[in-house]
Image 1 (cartoon, rainbow, N blue to C red):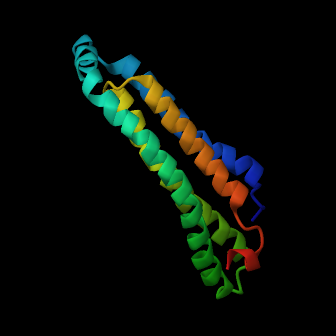
Image 2 (tube, rainbow, N blue to C red):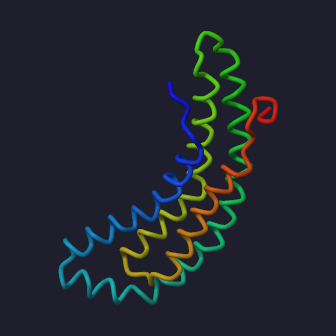
Length: 151
């Protein structure tokens, strides 16, 4: 298996939440009826404070993701050490840990995109997406690069 560069993989993971917002927006624009747009406007004042609540939640999740990444990396590398017959075991372990941990800041960001679809204002959602993307990149910047650092 070819080595996956973190320089390529992390930005791709980081932009996945903003891309989901773009897809949701395109679907909403194409499929929502006038009545649905009216309901969305009616829900705006109720949903926007909830969307603002996702900003600190995502910031906390971004920091938590760093620790989840380290813990997941320890576990997956320990399991990979037992699979000596598989030459890609360590790389697969690192990718598994990365995928698990990067979901931590992205889950609240995805929830925020649904709030936008339901009627929340865009600003808190965009801030949440930015924090989630930075959280993903933070995990890559702080990840141990050798097996001894991961343990």
